[in-house]
Amino acid sequence: MSLIAGSYERFIWGFKLKSPKHSETLTLTPLFSYPAHLSPIKSVAVSHFAAASGGSDDTIKLYDLASSTEIGSVFHSSTVTSLSFFTPPSLSFPRNLISAADDGTISLYDTDPFVNLKTLNVHRKGVNDISVHPSGKLALSVGRDDCLAMVNLVRGRRSFYCRLGKEASIVRFDESGEKFFMVMDEKISVHEAEDARLIFEMDNKKRVLCAAPGMNGMLFTGGEDRNLTAWDSTSGKVAYSIEDAHSARVKGIVVLSRNDGGSTDDDPYIVASASSDGVIRVWDVRMANKDKPNPLAEANTKSRLTCLAGSSLKSFRRLQVLNANVNEEQDATVGGG
Image (cartoon, rainbow, N blue to C red; front, top):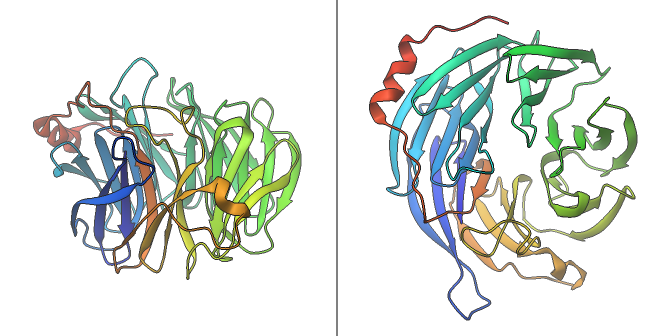
């Protein structure tokens, strides 16, 4: 399993989470760290052997995790605010990369060869977050225009757009794709994916800064309360919470699997979190009932972390993204929305 973090200081950090055989211990082993961007990193995404980072320097950087090297960069229209890979269940490498920007656009890329398929004008103001449906056919986005949008990724057009009345900072599909979550400050709303109908709201008391869906309708959140909280989206109640998981704001959460090449079905209780204090921690959230649960693994980057992403590393097949093809994207025609 790999963890990728971005920082305000322009550094990208890569770690491999290892579990020695016949051992319950975990270790975070550094893979790389270097100043990847010219300005703060806003978002990162990981899919098996591929990783991407987006910054306020209007650039997307691409990485090969197997060799721990940067393999190319793509100039964007504005600050890159959100990134997401889509990997079909039948493949071990990502098929598409979807990016969102501060100018309200969403771009869809093919990863082999790497080329811009289309760029859409989706929001009137900057896009805060995007979430790709498990089918890969559509994506939801929320923006600073206080709106929710749906993008048809097959046809390459916006298919739905509605005003929320308040700005949402995060949107996430659940693992099944039947529901989605939206975050507005300290409020978390749960919706039916089919018609966006509101099911109920959950109150975190303090502002939520990151969220990650888990198995069986669970949603993990972190934020200004410095806690790692697991919500049951069926009942709308807190299932368990690790209080004071960090000494500062929690800026990123990833649901992991203990087994390399496995899925979250194997071990749905391993969760990683990153804080603006520079610390990345890996937890067994079942230990939340203890007075002072200890993390399973920890690493201190000594930087102000802004985002976190993670994925299992599948050793049986390596992602093939050609360096030469990355440069072709610069000459690709950009479509309109």
